[in-house]
Length: 246
Image (cartoon, rainbow, N blue to C red):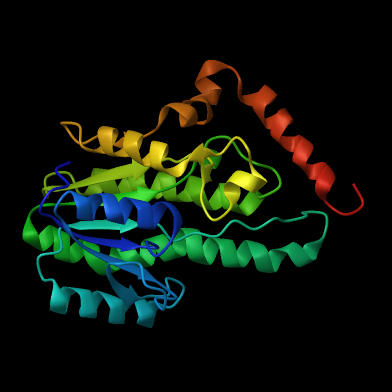
């Protein structure tokens, strides 16, 4: 993917990985708009307010972005929440519902809003964002894993349906990345700038890859193939001891 002189919308790009990616596109010479529920803080880029759980908000954001930038040719869907759930307690359902609404349905709402525009142009790029957890569940966050696995499957189907339209579909599969203090929560989290260096190197390859999987995330993406799945899930299940009464 050429990231120079593009017009890019990154939904969920007002912080973390999304903002870091937005700044890399901008540094390469692209026009970048970042979207989020809160656009009050200065991120140094054009912003648009969007709540991916609200279809009307998504439609308003689409109309605003395309009115100002009718040449949008890259759409990145980054919005996501990670919520802990105790599946022994039925009260977890609220967290599960929120997670699916943001991570999976929110992604679909954004794609539905912008795919017709990209197809009508006859060229463009869509980038969805899943997680290593889509392929190697983290039992403390079960619906997060399920929702990201859903985005992976949806991305595969979208790519197949857009063959011949000129619109390429790429899935970014991050590991844990040190953003918003995560380096203190998870010492194994990958430093943000190093992660972005590797992502940009992979993303800009020719041809544009179907999946962008940095080295650290390879063990998650290919755990079943490599025969390490059961061992790694068991290791991750140790985190369940942090739940009340465990």
